[in-house]
Length: 351
Ligand code: NDP
Ligand code: ZN
Image (cartoon, rainbow, N blue to C red; front, side, top):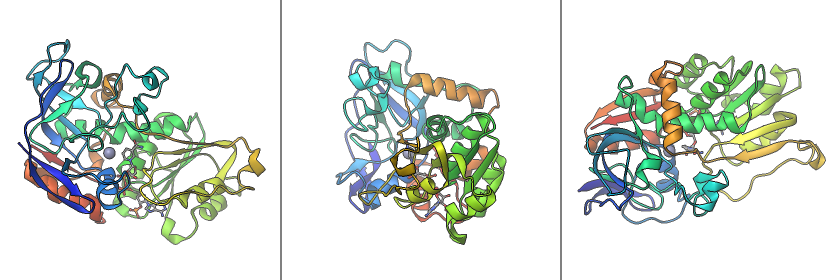
């Protein structure tokens, strides 16, 4: 079968590989829709997780099951399924501790395009099918459903980790597709005022659609200064970071109130350390929490989050700015993600 791969750092291309086989609890899936992620860009062009050779990229997909192992109970060939980007080993101790994202070690629940071949192929392998796949509801289109693999759970995880509560003021730094879903998550959890930080108009319009009340352009000067001015110096209850770099934490510390939470979902692709200002952190006594999280995968999350689309509580269609047909088109779609033209939020490829 063919797949679109990271050949080595800074290099991508098509590879020919043997089709994967299902172990007793696994499934083999043929993608129906896939989408490239900014994480693929960090992996290939920033070397964020180190060298990988001929590793098929991609971790966002909906597909059709073509084969299941002998012990799989709830899925069969022909089922249309949502495939989460994170597919944990559910028996791992980390999973039992509530951190299935790290089953087997730091970030080890993230298998596609990290530890094994990803979804940009004619076929791909899913571990622990009963625990990691979810049936695609009839009334959700494949293009929308592919946003359930990664964008929806990641953005909402940012809002969950920030413990956003009714009426709070939240700043979402970065409003690409992930940050937009964080805005939507903060809104669903009842935030009052939501600052959205970005520069591209297409993202600004979408942020307003998802519930942003104030827009801050980071290119107009310090984010912290702009938000402090708009809040009479008080800052915000919660910050969700979904864009920027290590320096973004310095801005976040400067706007968070005592007892606030900074929730990072940005994949930090390069650099070594970030600074936490001593005074901003209340001389170490400000009760300010900093948490960073990989999205939670697995079947239950996919089933519950798909209810948001099925029952029209969340509309992901504004994210889908670029649509392609055919597996071959994953290459231009990935390049869009790398180049981030001004009219792009998220590309999707139908197969
Ligand atoms: P995008 O590149 O589409 O969006 C990034 C956003 O950050 C844009 O709004 C951009 O503004 C803004 N931005 C860029 N530079 C700065 C800066 N210096 N200060 C403030 N804002 C800035 O990315 P995605 O939404 O696709 O992904 C966001 C991050 O989430 C990525 O790092 C991705 O790898 C990660 N990710 C994490 C996951 C997880 O499980 N935690 C899962 C999936 C993705 P503009 O372009 O408007 O100028
Ligand atoms: Zn991703």
